[in-house]
Amino acid sequence: MIVPSYWAEARTTARAKGRDITLRRFGWSDTSAADAQAQAELRVADAAQRAASGETVPRRDLKLPYNGAQGLPIREEVLARHGEAVITRNAYGARCLNVPNLLIADVDFGTKLPAALRVGLQLLLVCVSVAVLLALGVGVVGIIGAIGSYLLGSVLTHGLAKRRSHTSEKGAQQRIKDFMASHTDWRLRIYRTPAGLRLIATHAHMAADAAQTREFFDAVGTDPIYARMCLNQHCFRARLTAKPWRIGIPGRLKPRPGVWPIRPERLPEREAWMQRYEREAEAYAACRYLQTLGNGREDPDLLALVALHDAQSKALDDSRPLA
Image 1 (cartoon, rainbow, N blue to C red):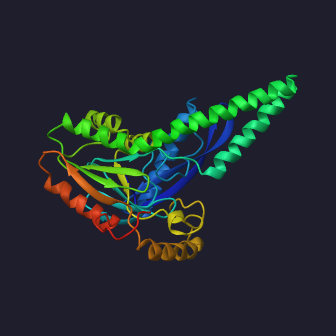
Image 2: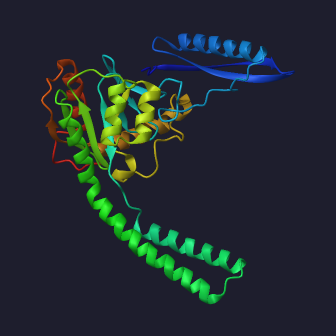
């Protein structure tokens, strides 16, 4: 896991396949901006040399934060460091805990689209279907029959989906219990989140790319995007504060996009947004502790990280709504 405090970019022109191309590369450092710039120069020089030798290389590194930044460090503002754990501000403004060896998993429950959106999509599908049938020369009777069949199918599938949504939380709980029944040496803390569950293993240090981590992710139904990013960034991650749109703050972190670092002239706008967000997010919790499962002995080093997570996410305060 790498979460640098300093970022820089270097560019150069290289001769590749008979024409000049411009290459850009980022550099990063925990020491200084100068060190970040030096690394950027080394990386862009290496890219130019490979391009000149005939290798196809990307023209630039994409300026991406956490999700999608495969092969590059986490590009977010560092708010605090606690040993190997780092608290950052993500692209939409929330605080996040990044840890290399504390297994954290998010399990989301099934969700339904808002009723108005479902009806709108159904009407759109009906209109498109009618247009296609008319173009194919299908008569009025055939069109009425097709629409009737579609509406009947929608009613039946909606009923099945509703039943599945009612059992999705039970299904998630059962998968966790089944896993713990066959892993009696584990110790697992369970939290409720706005969208599902958060699981934190406290019995042993684990790496994001370990076989037992992948086994656990698969067994409990971890969100696949989260699982992939844990593997890409070699760390686990937990959101510690509310999503802004859940607490009535329109839009996301200003300026857009909120990828760190921000140009100095845009920092006042960012600071104003953050002050409002931090003030209003204080009334909410990111998750709520439910229970602990398993007979494994808890690792004292991991418990310190759990205490940090619980305090920052307000997981032990039942009076605060989840957001």
